[in-house]
Figure 1: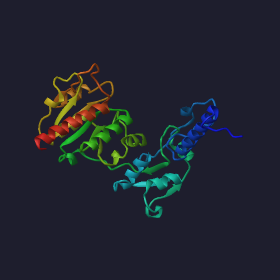
Figure 2: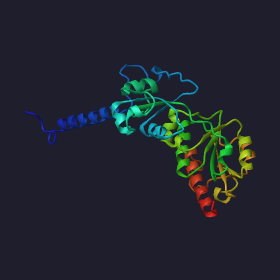
Figure 3: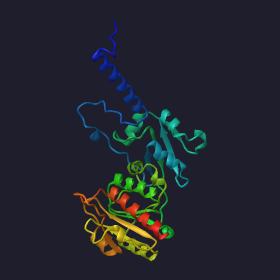
Figure 4: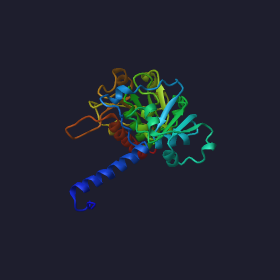
Length: 294
């Protein structure tokens, strides 16, 4: 006689365990969680070696990221690798009309290409990098975000998403000690990479001086800044400058910005993750620009 899961504890536990496995397997099939490495006694991260990509090639992954890339007319796709399930969820219309190859794959195929920890959701797009942008094109934007050697692509992606939310005209960073366009950064940006220029410059001090000539008032965020950010904003064009995780702004950057400012925090903690600080600074700057009519 079969046991009733409603009254028998062991049967109930087994029943719920089966349901959990079904949910997990469905997520794995959709590529929402990594496929486990069946080999025993070996660490996954030592088993996988990233593929060597050409200098003019980027791999983007994740449903929202890839969908945004495909909707961006400036993108030049090379190939779409996608599971049958993810292809339906992408909602991109007839495959034949895309104009580039589409390959139906398994989640395990994408794990091998992207690594066991990539949450690819069953889709990967091989594409050319976005076109290079120049600072002169930003003269009509009232709000910019400048990063001084922020190295973590997750932080840069999160900052990019926030910058889009607050209507910033670009995210500007250095070529050295900052992430290039990549799948990790794009996934963290959740589509924002396609919506805002990501400009990498050679010399940050020179770029700030060029922004000053374009009419921008640059404010460097520093926990020891002499005045609160709200009292430091000036003019009708703002360029917020944030430093790297841990080190903050470099000395040359401090000397080049028009002003140094702090985020006033009454609590015991006086510093924030750079992506959180960027969100607060962007909000305050947008409020200032709205009041000043910019």
